[in-house]
Amino acid sequence: MEIERTGSDMEMEREEEDDEETQLLKDRFRLSAISIADSEAKKNGMQPSESIVACISNLAFNYVEHLAKDLELFAHHAGRKLVNTEDVILAAHRNENLSLSLRTFCNDLKAKEPQSERKRKKASRKEDKATTSALETAELLR
Image (cartoon, rainbow, N blue to C red):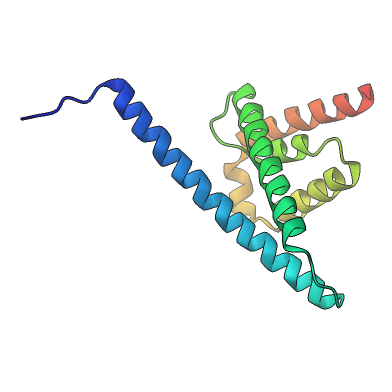
């Protein structure tokens, strides 16, 4: 006897897989946060509270989830399917020091890029200039 699967059954199955994947990522993120907290605590001769580390890792994970959604929206708004460095810089616009550090890092990477790679990316340069102009305009409006 063959069981017919409906669209809603397949959708529920996909949601369960997504939930499992999210939980796996969250667990790995939490382990990384615990590892970082323990390492930093040892450097300073301290012992971090497990509940505090768990709280911080949950807050950080939630922040990263929101950041990822913002980056997707920025790329979609620009008519792209992939997130690029300008999207990340735009997401950091509220933190001037972080934004400046990201721009410097991005410019350093571009400077180290071989000349032949630069020629292939002329179209993306025009896009970068447009995005940079938009960032500068947004900064002037503040």
